[in-house]
Length: 268
Image (cartoon, rainbow, N blue to C red; front, side, top):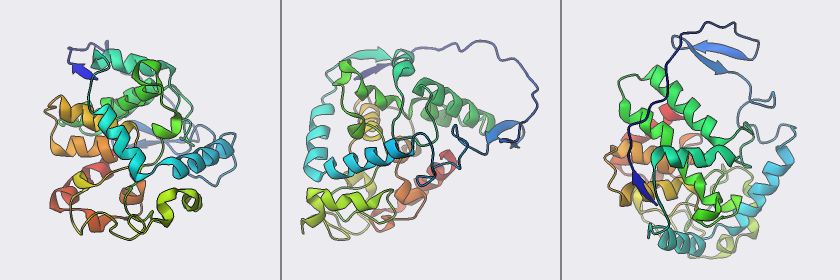
């Protein structure tokens, strides 16, 4: 995909006062932060009983079985060609009107709403960090991989928490038990702490499970994005919860990764 940048007009902002309900709290000068997800549960609770829980668990079983080192290498080689379509950022955003992330236990809304909500929330809290506003708007655009024009990949090859391949799967990864059916799990080349990597090699040298994060990262890099390294880091690793929630895989990080991780913590 080649990106064409246009000047976007989102309309007139109207100041509005509203009464908070029991599932919302006011945060940082006005941003309304919900305390429960769409289904009335705590955020990212994969054990809670909800109408999506079983489907989410089945999704992670499929992704953990199929995301191998060889699969990721093949996908990166195919999609870094950038030979499918040229469009503007906003045209790409509009494609997400028809996309719902089946791996998300918190949300069942079209992804374009998620992009706009994230960008507006960050603009509220960090009004002077324009690069961060843009990063928030485009961080999930790689989910267009679900659409026919981009190859119509299955959900397990597009969404969900991400993690390194080519080394041992950390136990903090959601539904870790299903990795036992992944061919790499028993492969001595890939099932040790470092696997094919070396200590502090830098996450840019680590293969991550394939999906929208890595694809959008490649799109930004191949189109010579002027986003700072922290913005690119957020795009590639915002679903890497084993790292920024559980602290796993820090032995692979270099100094630049450690600095950029601070921005991912803010973003998440």
